[in-house]
Image (cartoon, rainbow, N blue to C red; front, side, top):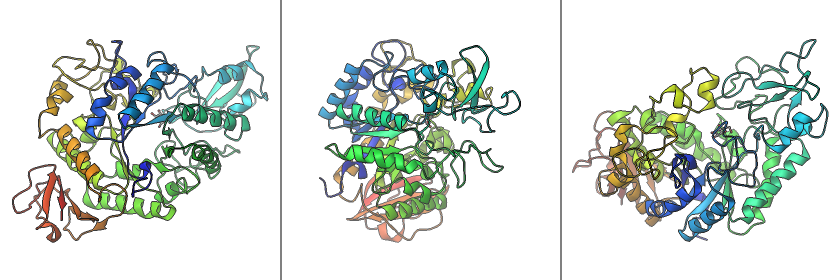
Length: 530
Ligand code: GLC
């Protein structure tokens, strides 16, 4: 083991959104052989592990987060043999593999849900999900006022086998994603078995989808005024972040710990309070969680520093490392979030150096290393996210951060697949952003990520550990890492003088042109060795 402890305490993990990464067969949808064919790119980028979004058989009502078989691969993405070959090849390239586990809900086509629809109220088949009788004299009112995260009600009424209007089932997401009942021992046993299935195949860990959502208040009370459906969980919410969820993860941890090789869990946990987040990372629960406090912080020195401090303080209480994340397949890409255009790119470059210098692990969402912006002008007819459709287009949804990657050439699909096809259209301007274009350009975003990751791997100061804030003025963040490393970020819109501690330091890497006297331009970060 390295002096920094197990790999997951300091890894840089690259998120592969499989359907948009690389398409091997020309159907316009990325696939596992496509990922396999690009492993050398990922190794050369310098990441340690890959997290793959769901590739299991699925009707794709929510891009694979509606799983109909947890132990196979959707034909769109390949075969189980392709998954095995990818795991083996990734390991041969020195890359670990994390797969996505979706425990809060199945697809409505999962055999369990089909059986539940065919079985009567009160049956063992229905008890795996959250079926309830409706309100009102004829049961035609939904059991409570909970809303779907994707818009509309969180309840759908079924038709019973005899054709009469029947019970309602809960779906915190799309109607095609019925929620499982995690008080049911059969559900728990099934997921233990699914974990073992993938652990036996050699995966190094799991990303847990909606990890804060599995337990629901058994009374199913109405959502009170002041409690939102989406967003981050807050104390007292009837279906987010209930205490009962922790017992599930203690059971999972025992399973993972019984395998050799530091298998790991990372939770997708949207809770507003870092202290509540830390509860999931107690030594006998999950290993890490995405740090959304950092992701949602605006590009502003005070807010960024507060997000870092709060996260590190709370996680230290339970001995868990932080993981820093700027983008994923659910949020607007950070080039755009930070202002878009040249400003957004400048800030994204600085943010990359900030993130990769912070103690702990980091996530890189495919395409951020190319500086891809959100594609905001996708026409409604190509959009696929249920959020867009269930809100009548009021919410644009998440397709704009899921557009297939540009690899090479000057015409769509820019090397994504053998032909022009891509499941979402790529903007014309992306010819400028291809891997091929950026690889040879030392001033490109790709070159910045490669350099930063190379230094990160070589410098003992980076990765696991702690930081020390250094005195710096208003819009400037400066911190040291031992031994001999300093990161300075000017998040303001005016040039800033180098803080006193770094004037004699050696400049290692910068996201923009640093002056000879150490002056940092606006929205610029720099790494120094001292
Ligand atoms: C998570 C996934 C998201 C999905 C949702 C429902 O938030 O990241 O993409 O839509 O869970 O499974």
